[in-house]
Structures are given as C-alpha cells and as structure tokens.
Amino acid sequence: MQHSENFDAVIVGAGFAGLYMLHRLRKLGFSARVLEAGSGVGGTWFWNRYPGARCDVESMEYSYQFSDSLQQEWEWSERYAGQPEILHYANHVADRFDLRRDIEFDTRVAAATFDEAAACWRIKTAEGAELTARYCIMATGCLSSANVPDLKGLDAFRGRWYHTGHWPHEGVDFSGLSVGVIGTGSSAIQSIPIMAEQAEQLYVFQRTPNYVVPARNAPLDHDIQQAIKADYAGLRQRAKQMRNGIQYPVNEASALEVTEDERRRQYEFRWARGGLSFLGSFADLLINKEANDTAGEFIRAKIRDVVSDPAAAATLSPQSIFGCKRLCIDTHYFETFNRPNVSLIDVNRAPVEGVARDGIMAGGKLYPVDAIVFATGFDAMTGTLRRIDIRGRGGRRLAEKWSEGPRTYLGLMVADFPNLFTITGPGSPSVLTNMLPSIEQHVEWIADCMLFSQERGRGCIEATPEAEDAWMVHVDEVASATLFPLANSWYVGANIPGKPRVFMPYIGGFPRYVETCNQIAAEGYTGFALT
Ligand code: FAD
Ligand code: NAP
Image 1: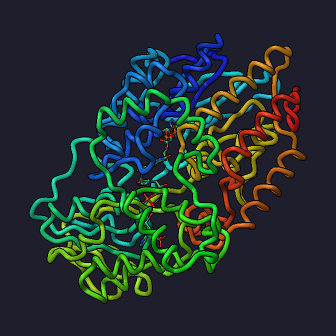
Image 2: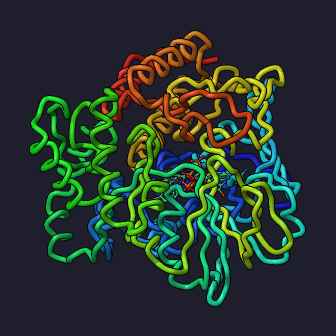
C-alpha cells in the first residue's frame, strides 16, 4: 500500500470485531479496508499464545451466530476451546467469507485525523501509508495493549522475558529453567499449572490473590454438540436475555434468605458444574456485601482444602469483593502450589522492586530466574485507542478528551469525533459479557447507522455532547448501584499507575443495553446529529 487510497470505511483491527465488520459492510455495498498490526487474523487469539490459553465462555457460545451455516458446520473439540483452536476458527471465518483480500497485515495505524472540510478521516500508518475514508471504525479490542510494569533493571536481565499477550509463535521451552511469573490474574492462572510441569523451578509473584472457580473443561461430545445445534437459535436467544449474555441457570434467591445448608448446596452445585455459572448462585452476590462474603468464604474454604501448606493457602486466599474483578476459571491452579518446584512469593507488602542481571528482586531478596513471564494484563479498554493519535473536530485529541476517563455515547461514538465508531468501546457492556454477541450487536448497529446516514445523503453522523453527558451519568449510576466500583480491578483502571479511576464498561446488562440501542435507532438515532 504505497499511495493514498480512499474507502467508505477503514476498519482498524482484524480480530473477531474487525472480521465481522468487514463482512457486514461488504454485504451492504460499502468499500472497506481493514488495517491490522499483526501478521494474521484473530486479534486476542493471534497474540495470546501462552500455554493454557483458552476461553472461559463455553465454545458453543464463544462463537459467531451471524451465519447459521457457519455455526452448524463448525465442530468444537472442547467445552472451552484452546487458543490454537479459536485461532483456527478465526482463520476459517476469514477464508470462508473471503475476507483476506481486504485486510492489510503488518500495518499499524498511528494516527487518524478528521478532515472537517472534506468530511473524511485521514488515516496514517506507522509504515508511512495514508488512507482516506468517510468512516473510521475502531475494532482495536478492549484487551490489546500489553501492560509491562516499568521495572528497573529489566534491560540488563541476562535471560529472556515474555508477556502473555505477546507470546512467541514458536512457543517457549522452559525445561530445566528457573522461571519467575509476575501476576496472578486469568492469564497466569491458566498458564502456571502448565509452566510448573515444565520448569525446574517456578516462582509465582503474587500481588493480589484472585477468586478462582474450576473450569471443568472436557472434550465436547459430538452428540451433545448436535443436540445444541438442533436448537442453536434457542440457545442464542436465551443467552441474550442474560445480563452477561451467557446462558446458565440463575438462582433468584438472596444468599442471605436461605439456610446455611441450602447456600452450601447451591455453591457446591455450581462448583461441580464449573465455569462462570458460579456467578448465578444467588441474585444479590454482586450488590450486597454480606451476601458477597458468603461466596468469598466458600471459595477460601476450597483453597484451604486443596493447598496443603496452611501459610500458602492463606496467602492464596482473596479477601477482596467476590466477582467484581473478572472471575478466573482454572484447571488445577491451586493444586500447583503443592508441587515441590513451585514457590509462592507474596509481593503485596514487599513489592517487586526490579530485575537484576540474574533474577527478580522483591522484598529485598533476589530470586534467581532464567526467564520472566509478565502475566501483568493490559491497559484495558482505553489503552489501545489512546496510543493512536486520534483527532476530531478542531483538531481535538481523543487522548486529551479522555484524560479524566473515557467519555462516549453508548460506547459507540464520541462527541466531536464524527463518523468514528468504537466496537465494544468503554460505556458499552463489552468485557462484562460474552464478547462475541456484544461484538455482533455493535457491528450490526454500526452498519445500520451508516446506512441510515447514507440514505439521508448526509456526510456525517455524530453523538451530541448532551447525549454523551447523559449516557455517562447513566453508566456511572448503574455502576454505583453495585459493588463493582469498589474493587481494584482493571475495569476501573486500577492496574495502571496514574490511570483515572472510572468504571469503564456499562453494567446495566446486555438485554437493557440492546433494547436502548434498538430504541434509539428506531426513533431516528436520538442523541445523534446528522451534519
Ligand atoms: P481483539 O481480538 O483484541 O483484536 C483487536 C485487533 O486490533 C488486534 O489484532 C490488534 O493487533 C489490532 N490493533 C490494535 N491497535 C491497532 C493499530 N493501531 N493498528 C492496527 N491494528 C491494531 N472474551 C470472552 O467473551 N470470553 C473469553 O473467554 C475471553 N477470553 C479471553 C482470553 C484472553 C487471553 C484475553 C486477552 C481476552 C479474552 N476475552 C474473552 C476478551 C477478547 O479480547 C474478546 O473476546 C475478543 O476476542 C475481542 O475481539 P476484538 O476483535 O474486539 O479485539
Ligand atoms: P489481569 O487480570 O489484569 O492480571 C494481571 C496480574 O498482574 C494481576 O495479578 C496483577 O496484580 C498483576 N500485576 C500487574 N502489575 C504488577 C506488578 N507491577 N507487580 C506485581 N504484580 C502485578 O491480566 P490477565 O490475567 O492478562 O487478564 C486480563 C483479562 O483478560 C481477564 O480479566 C479476562 O477478561 C481476559 N482473560 C481471559 C482469560 C480466560 O479465562 N478466557 C484468560 C486470560 C485473560 P493486581 O491484581 O494486584 O493488580
């Protein structure tokens, strides 16, 4: 791509969002080009190749539904597919719908500037190309900017270091090595049991313990899969009625109204079933601290049952609010701490200070390691967008507009940034839901909105500042009615030093959100201006 090219839409990112956006726009007759920093499709599943990476939403639901033939023909091998299989699926989709011919790989968007006179976006890539497009659609992902802590001495470390979100494609062999893992979030919890089997010695540096429930992963029986496929539409419809877009039984009782026996029975049932359905144990777990404590205590008791060293069990036991950070699901995570080659290092009070030539320094002590794994997460929801120099009306920078926290209307558009859409942007349910249906809903809404604008012969559609303000008040109100903002999670940016503390996703629930979006569209895009 040497010269300037012009399209109806430029889509940034070729993960699940960018792929479907391209497909949808093509069908409607828009010309579109996808720009992708990586050398392949799949986004999250292209980059996160760490051992044990897999989805925590069941495969039958963590998949597209826009094409019934696609969902009927694809066969998942496990209850929760592993990263290679999900990446294979993304590649299959790209081939099946002939998407690659409109995707430019190894192309990182560095800047996007709205040209008011021409009513178009001028998009510049780090490689020096320039494109123009009426619409710019950010399909850049919520968890796509790796957070590597700024540790003194890392440059001088004699071994190799890795971030789970940028794992080498050829894999990493830890055999015979002493390895330090920093972080104990979802990525660490999936990878630690596998790395522990390979490494000679594994040091796990834990700042905050997490609530973890068993995944109960297993091969997915063909007959069960066929039975689900016989009523796939029914499953998808039921899932869409759930706050988080994932189908599982929800108990409407309060954790405080039932007897202790009933409470335990309910938790044991969910524990045995495995996965995120544990969140559906009781209706008030995420809004009432006393109810929440009962779930926390149940999980702490499970940790004490599994971890043989009482001191390690205590260190691994979270005291935080249950379920208000992303609930982790595991396969043999706690058992790993019974292995003689695994050491748990509590860096809560004595933080990781830096890296020496031969190891990690924490609490005044050197832990000798040959390799370091940063399982330290992402600058979530805003990091990737802020890294692109996005300028709207009057040259206003998005990063500056969001300096106190992200502001959007519906998580879809930003006032003063006409014709710029964000798929699963902050202010939408996104990361609190099964992301695939959330992505599909955004893609379809955006495509309809573009058609609406085009059919009226207007150059631009944009969120009004009043609609954005009102939406932000609502996003904040619904969050404040829950325990979520109290937890030091990446949902509030607590993992990134200096990031403003704002609860970023919309917690009003997927059904309510979809209804709002549909109503706004049906009423002629209330809160949006055609200019
Ligand atoms: P991504 O998959 O993040 O794709 C964004 C793409 O944009 C990337 O390929 C990136 O390279 C590209 N990009 C970014 N900036 C630029 C730029 N400036 N120029 C060019 N290209 C750019 N969600 C669930 O619902 N269930 C799960 O089980 C689940 N498991 C997960 C496991 C892991 C390890 C992680 C990290 C996330 C997980 N998620 C899960 C969330 C996951 O991110 C989404 O489900 C989904 O894959 C996001 O798709 P996306 O296309 O929106 O973004
Ligand atoms: P994460 O949940 O943000 O966890 C990062 C971990 O690193 C935390 O334990 C954090 O501690 C620690 N950490 C960060 N900086 C540190 C420092 N300077 N010193 C010591 N510890 C530090 O990141 P993640 O595990 O990559 O997961 C991110 C999200 O991706 C998940 O919440 C989930 O949505 C998605 N994901 C899903 C799956 C899945 O099961 N399908 C798997 C992986 C990821 P603190 O808690 O103290 O900040």
